[in-house]
Image 1 (cartoon, helix red, strand yellow):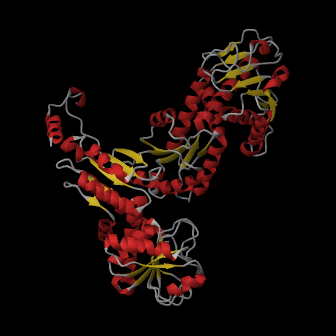
Image 2 (tube, chains in turn brown, green; image 1 turned 90 degrees about the horizontal axis):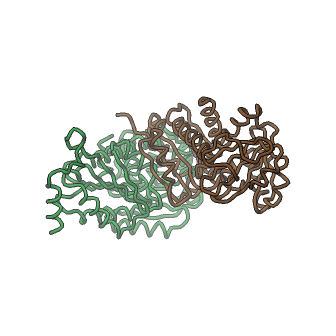
Image 3 (tube, helix red, strand yellow; image 1 turned 135 degrees about the vertical axis):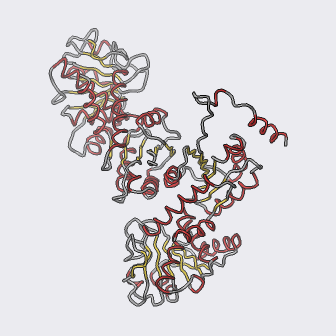
Length: 302
Length: 326
């Protein structure tokens, strides 16, 4: 009898996200086992219990998923998990806290597609504003876009928090190879004048970019909003929009709504969960890999 | 008794359409392992083992208290009918072997014939690890030195942890003069020795070894060393081992470098322990033990599924089966 595919799902929260559980099962994992309220200090022990209890053949059918809410914590847990492996006793690990990595990847891949289709350009040298960008999705999106060559500014209501987040993105997630900057929400009227792209990744139900500001954005090309709950995060961008012209934009900007992003996010998460099932060598997956598969999906669906 | 009668009526009632497959034949029930664990999370080790042993469905219950056992057990037994209970079992995990035994003991009186299921206690895999360790060391002791456990003095380093205590109890019950060693406090070692002696009728002694000097003193007349400390902790270095004169077998369960006992290789099973140059000691490494432990836990889990009569399994049964495997 073939051994079952087992995904050990770790979260720092008090419950797993049913979203992640459904995704894992649909990707082909047979058993998805929850480990809740997991402290980073417990990761090593859990990982070693997982790797020392199956044969090498069985380990190819074993994986670890890291959920939770915080980007940094999830990345730390991913590193701890990787360091806890004792080759050849090793399994794949995938971090996607609150689904933020795959959501961010979906958003950036969708924006990249619109930049190419409608403006024949790329992220290289573009000015990106990540509005409400201090949360998990904003952080991951900022890093992915910066790695694709954009100048990303994280905008938050509290400037010091935005600055700390930008520093974290540049140094920790970007390995010091990218520079993400910060700005205060109260100054966004100034920043919008040079913005090419806007990501709206704030809390649901808050308008981050008004019609008035859109009218004052002379080089805005694409605005993407992950919020599916009215009111929209970007005035005039509906959850169903996928490259539709934004009313009132003087530069012909197009909007991308939450459902278009969600579709790519779904594909990215599913593909990474499947990669873990199929790989011969263990994989350690996070936002960069999420962006890789999100791009792949966008390319295939052209 | 009314409850029981109602249940029997319920399960003898004609099968409802919802319980039949599309062909009209009643679908075979899936096997379910209910995993009770007093810690905040079940162990991925136990999860992997249970699924690999063939359980179809595995249900974790974390943070379970001793008081909950009766109610949980009865919820398990009264919900599947006499045929269903044969495909149902309980696993008790955790980190505290005393608590695991108490939970195992609490399961048995909660059963109501014919609604009975098998129960295996193996907290942190400690019972099967300890059983495999002692069985492997016993075999090396006999094969290489022609001795039995009852002829020997055994030291258990990391002796106050779950694997250490179970190792100590098994060795002691086989007649070895066994010392549980804590690395910080003789009092905690003595408390634990007393507690388990009372519970299992063993004769454990206690000691502390926080430095090489104390380790040397203990090793002077020791025949066997069990290393069951935390993964990655070096318990005995080469300098200490070089002074051991009477050592016959050293067994180590730590697979994460550095080895608990310097010079032991992962797969050793009776290979000379060169670091102990003044003795004829042989080594039993973590993968040799792990291999037996793995087969043992798999076999015990399968026993839960296959046994006609309900069985209640702890480290004593684990040791018996480990010996048979070897």
